Structures are given as C-alpha cells and as structure tokens.
Length: 128
Image: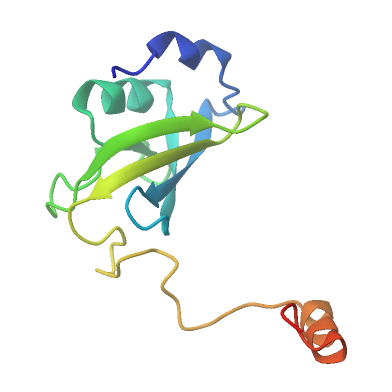
C-alpha cells in the first residue's frame, strides 16, 4: 500500500522544521535508533522506501546506509497522538548504529534514577 503523502500536512514539526523519528525493527520490535526528519527527508523517505534523515550537525539530508550499506526499508510510518513524533518500522539491512551495534541503544551503561532503584528494593521489583 502506498504511503499517504497528504498526511504530512497534519504533522507538527518543531520551530527548526524537524520532527523526531523513532526507528523500530518491523520483525523484532526492537528500537533501533532515533533521528530527526524534516519535510524534505520525509518526502524522500516515502519516494525511496528507505529512511532518509536530517543531520542537525551537518545541516544536510542523509540516506541511512548510503555509505555503509546498512539501509532501512520502510514498512510503516505512524505519528503519535500529538502528531509530533514518528514511529518508523523498518526491515534493517545491517546494524542501525554508526558503532556497528544492532541498535543505538546497545550501551553498557544504564542510567536509572535513584528513586527508581530505591522503589525496586523496597517493593521487591516490578515482578514481585
């Protein structure tokens, strides 16, 4: 089914003309990465059927996998209830992260608030 390009008009881009895009594996449901899109990158993504983002540091579009080969074939794009964040489900061709990790959330350090940790100790955890 082709994507409805008219739905772009209902999206809420921020003052810089950007919208956050959460990229998720269509097969595993795992969150792979978060990147920014502008109107042009979203249109190019729809045309190519692969993710194209906007690099804030370089102020330019980048087609995910153009140099690495780690492309992301778009299966669906959904907006959240406020239409200010996108969820893009993809079939990934290689790792999502520039570090060659499967996900940009493959990190060795987990940040947990002290209050959360304290509640886990006193409540016996969420599964208790």
